[in-house]
Image (cartoon, rainbow over all chains, first blue to last red; front, side, top):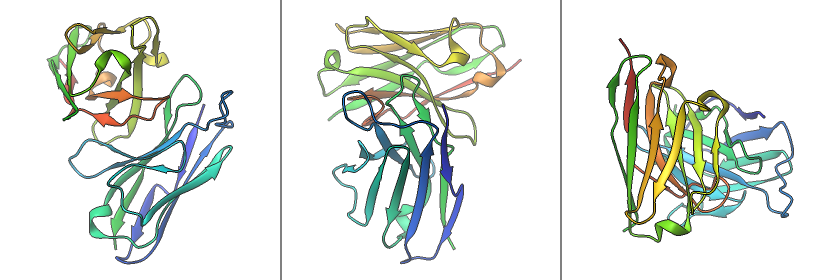
Length: 111
Length: 118
């Protein structure tokens, strides 16, 4: 079971938008009707932090410049205007199938 | 405050054993699935193992099956990972995580480093 993120490296100018794709090798729709796709952010030197669960449910404290969408096997994390604090690595994770699988990670840096 | 604090990491020789612990506080530990996630130096995240709230179900990534055992003590609010027959490729920071629903890991510990080397 494979989760493929792109791009793996994402240089962005401050204030500009950014977009990260996450594609799964199989549909992530569970038999219970939910889609268990989670996004995490890992800032340099820190533990990962959850941003979104079940595709588009934003965690408290996550700025609304972050959004997440998608369905089936195709998902996207978007940042409307990148700020300096957004630097780090972003991971998607599928939990629908019992062997949890992370994407490879996308490293966001400021140009 | 909801907290997970790992301990037990260190340097171990190939073929050796290590037991990681995770102390949980600030929430009803026995209501949650728990898991271990690892990160090799400079690499991405990898799910390692998951355990049911009552300890009745355990799941493992293929690369650690038969070598690692996840367990928990709900009376003392601890999660454990017994690691045997360690290999160099097991070198990683190991994170204890709370799993409210199928990989939606909402609480992470600070991690504990395991180094397998002679």
